[in-house]
Amino acid sequence: MTALPATTIALAGSFARELPELAVPWRAVDAAEPRLLVLNVQLATELGLDPATLRTDAGVRLLTGSAVPDGATPVAQVYAGHQFGGYSPRLGDGRALLLGELEDAQGRVRDLHLKGSGRTPFARGGDGLAAVGPMLREYIISEAMHALGIPTTRALAVVATGRFVRRDDWLPGAVLARVASSHLRVGTFQYARATGDIDLLRRLADHAILRHAPEAAESAQPYLALLQAVITAQAHLVARWMLVGFVHGVMNTDNVTISGATIDYGPCAFMEGFDPATVFSSIDERGRYAYGNQPAITEWNLARLAEALLPLLAEQQEQALQLAVETLGGFQKAYVAAWSSGMRGKFGLSEDVDDAAARLVIDELLALLESGRVDLTTCFRGLSAVARGRADSTRDLFTHRDAFDAWAKRWLALGPDADAMDRVNPVYVPRNRLVEESLAAATQGDLDPMSRLLEVLRRPFDERAGLERFAAPGPERSFRAYRTYCGT
Ligand code: AMP
Ligand code: MG
Image (cartoon, rainbow, N blue to C red; front, side):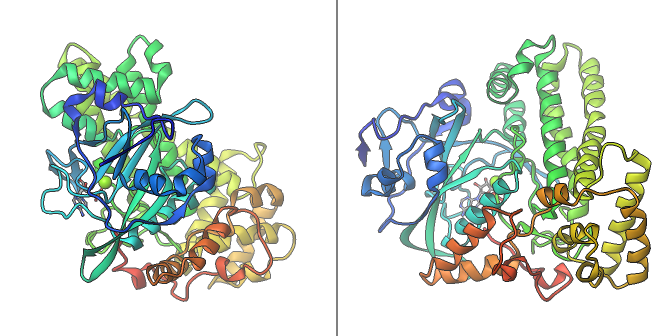
């Protein structure tokens, strides 16, 4: 184990120090032949890290965990979680480590975390490793989400380890360095609650308040205010997913953050042909985490958080329960408000258009999209052309063109703002076909297609000539063609 000079990077360990019951000090396995595949220069700079230093041998060792900065204590975090509805009392980082926290250029605390860094005490049957393809996939999709303005963990780097990982085949291994405002999950609270140690639960909640809801500390009921803050953040998050057609795929409670950021990009994907039943994960046989179920599942997950917080909400169990139920009741309202306001933006409707009229045109178009399995991204982007009097290519997306014409007439009467629409309806999203193509090339050693894709996705709203291929939907209208699509 080599130590990096402390000047390279200063990592704090507030999680490990304040919550030792939830942190097992651990070390990464050494990468056999580490090779930096991709470095997020923009993010490194935001974090106050020097990209040139990160590219050196010592930097690459830091990014795989085989060198730890002086004074840092990498830990595996423990958490519980409901997976597909069934409770697992002890999950935790089976193949991940929290290296520590750093302060970014704006003074915000960010976790630096590794995924694929070797087995930990929470690995159960797993090998603790990750393959190049899925780690690059997380890199691409999380960066695309960030560019779309959707809260997410960020990818700092992917380093190939030079080791092979056994999946169905032998695949090249990699470590992802990931940055997040924290890795606190609903499952972290479920674990703390299940220990029966109320002091631990309170310290965890205080830690979460400090990091994600500082205003809750001023409240007469700080823990209720924390629950409220998480409910609001998650309602906004899932609304953002719905507006762009993002399907997370594994909304287990261990994959739901307290910060309200998207985390854990496994079998996720962007829906193309509009269909609420869309599900990409081959293990989600019943469609629990289908596109259309995501808001209800978020609410269910938040109910698990509320349960975990009960002992902190009031002295009397009954009163705590009543407060929790009341607060959870706010989810639906917060979700509908976030979704409606986002949809109004996508349709270019101003404040002057009343809610009932807006809702009518929104619902009618969604029904048309669904009946024809129309590509969500292409359609919304195309609507601004319709507003500018160029309806043809958008109209052609629909099976029932007369119905579209009748709808468009009613919508145009509401005076949509085409320029405003172009600022919120992306041209470029990480489409399955493009992502797969770039990962296949990267796994063969050609990183150019991925760099090109990342470059396109970095400015999703800015339509550029020559990039038509990146905007085009795949040949299949239905998600069923990607049914077995899954990456971990
Ligand atoms: P996920 O579905 O990726 O959120 O992971 C669920 C749980 O399985 C977490 O506790 C992970 O740490 C663990 N896990 C997933 N893959 C592996 C692996 N290859 N080795 C060890 N643990 C893993
Ligand atoms: Mg997870």
